[in-house]
Image (tube, rainbow, N blue to C red; front, top):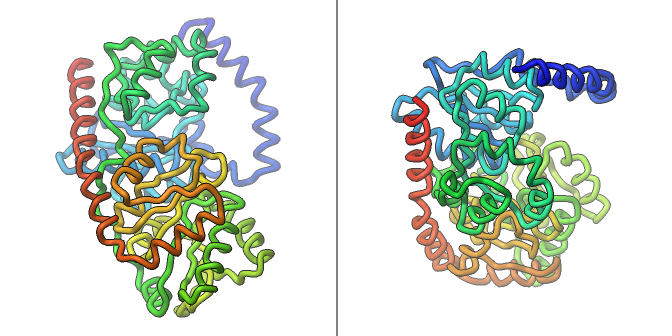
Length: 417
């Protein structure tokens, strides 16, 4: 790092220290993983020159696991990081043998320290993790950086176009981008990436995953008496829409339990308060204590790593972030577990997934909470096998995404060596 870069790094650190100290005082949770975020502690693999794979949070981590599992199976050294403590906790729960932790904050000192400690052979960023300092630090270390499942959303594209000059050094530091789709590839080129460094490798979230873990015994007992449906990855307002849909279906004679899984664990308290204000009496997963849920009960999922397994026993699923203007989350996770999928109109972040669901007939898009109730009633009144089989067959067409990304990693790593 040159004198000017050192000076700028020192200046930003000096300016940021008072704000950082204030944040640590006001929000004790920020202290969790502070050494990792500062680059003072990084995940260490048993082997030398590991492949470092980074995904922002839970959804990106689950996509990353589709790469991590075959890499580990062929004997590669791998480390994984996430930006959120939720993602880190899930990584440690699902793959305790994997070296995992929190990513460094995007400051030259932190990223350089983390790269020195981990010493990866390649850095793989899932989706659109364009961290300028991290990418620049990797370039200075001679470490190739890849973006895979690369996407640029409808909302982000105009902003990136305006920031094209600022993005130029960061894009220049990328060895390659494996884009989700032709549209995403074209957008990367439009914001300044050389076309010879972009190819379409597909969406890792569309690749069929390994089967979810079996449902834990206490949950099997809790859901043994009454059919259930799941509202997963919900945002404020969507929990109430799911509750109202449940009440409408029950009013027509359908016995049903609602399972609500807020997108962010820290929002569980707010979701519980909203459900109680709407007349429900939600039960927390962590406090089930062997109880059996009955018709009309609401289960609030406040644990990690169980949502995919719950989809596997549900009669139907709604995926959140889609009735509110967030852009949609992992629309395919219920289908992958064998469950019909309902989702709202806001799917800018999951356009390809929505198209697959609609084209195969395995999903139903609804316009609002009233339409959600009608769609739920339709799904519960039919045999969903044909919907599910058609959707899962469509998913099989994307199985090559993992192989294509693995091939890209090998090519880039080989050319760097």
